Image (cartoon, rainbow, N blue to C red; front, side, top):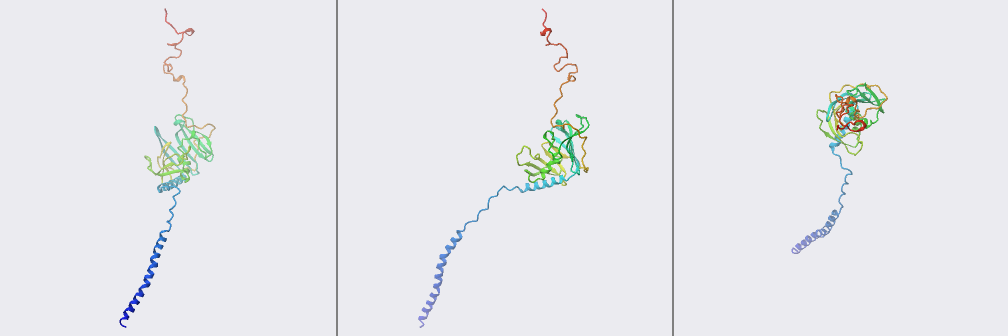
Length: 303
């Protein structure tokens, strides 16, 4: 009995181990199937490409800042003097008046007739006017001609363009739909304020404004503009605005002064040389060399 006990125990030990062997086989078979199922899952779809290239954050910020300053400029009513610098031309003083009622006036020395005549442009409740101012080349008293409605566009043949940065170009700078590219810029010489470079992003025969540099003070005061017509720089602190602008002179019927220089006047007897000779060097009535004799023949020597 003692000999059979160990065998029985051994049999029980053997039987106890057999279920573990039978469980291992199904697990070994199922593991590759599970791994294959995990590896066969499709990968995540890639993100769709962007519909358009994103704008640089700096450009968006600059555009927002410039739009805010231009909006402040629309509400800035003042009288201010600006220095206008144009290559190969003496500096000129431009006076800008933005009245409390929304009317405006810009006086432009040399703004007509090829720079030989001074003009004033003004928009009031009665319309858009060009006034001819007295000057060295035009000593007559000031007079004004109505050229359109208050919000009309001045024809290019009459337009010195100096008034635009204070009037309709502010509307463009505040319009986020306008095709503009805006970036920070350095101020022109002797200018102050925060400046921005403005470019147009759409080709156009008549762009909404001139590309260039636009500068403003924090309160919206335009401090400098560099554009195709030249460079405007604020010359001193602005003064308080009037209730409304006054035209430089009475309104008359007539033609406005154009931008083109007038033709030179015809020659007169006063254009002759002091000796009474014309430019050919022959005195009037002098039968000098080359004059025909009686009968239309040249004089000949005797013989």
